[in-house]
Amino acid sequence: MTARGGFTLLELAVVLVIAGIVATIVLPRLDLGAVRLDAAERQVSLMIAAGQQRALTRQHDIHLRFDVAGSRLLMHEDPDNDGEVDPGEREDAIPLEEGVVFGRAAASVGPPGAAPVSFREDSRDLPTLTFHRSGSASQAGGFYMAREDGVSEPGQVRALMVERATGRVVRYFNDEEGKWQRHTGG
Image (cartoon, rainbow, N blue to C red; front, side, top):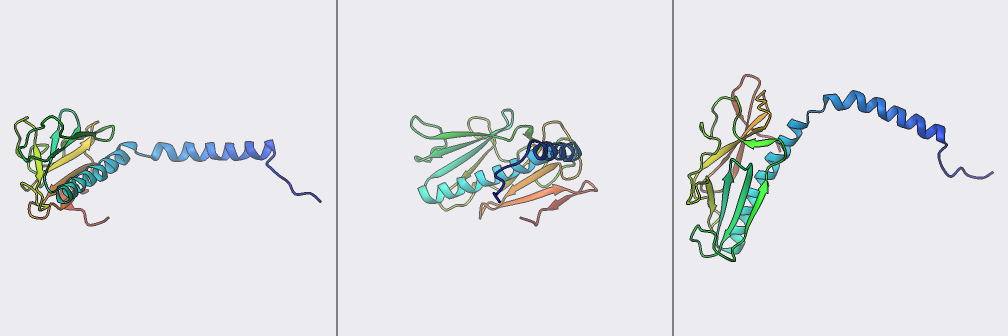
């Protein structure tokens, strides 16, 4: 008796039909806007942590500029600590996840205040958070992130606050009643 080495065409067709049925049931329920907002929140939190880490390891200022209009974060390594992007200094642009913007849509005012980003503006007129070589932040403040389509249902707008002394990010979400709650999970 010989072992069978593959699938028949009929078996493959049955599997494809079942996969198609499952996809038609699951896909309409998948909210890509929420998934993108989650991804953007993680991405920006990681960029803030990376900026702080670079300031500590490279022993010079790292500026994080929030380009609200361009929906991106600019990370500037500033070896001479003058706050300006000089020739030869690195500045990376990190776009937000597609469909996500800095702002709070129609959500109530939360911990960062009324503006999309509460950090003071720099000489380029962009809200800026600076990490010093000690790892501390230049100021306490925060920002909102929302879906570009303006959906502001519970959980669809996020607020992130940065503590000045530690540079730690504290995350908030809008609950079912429209109140801001501190995120305690991972």
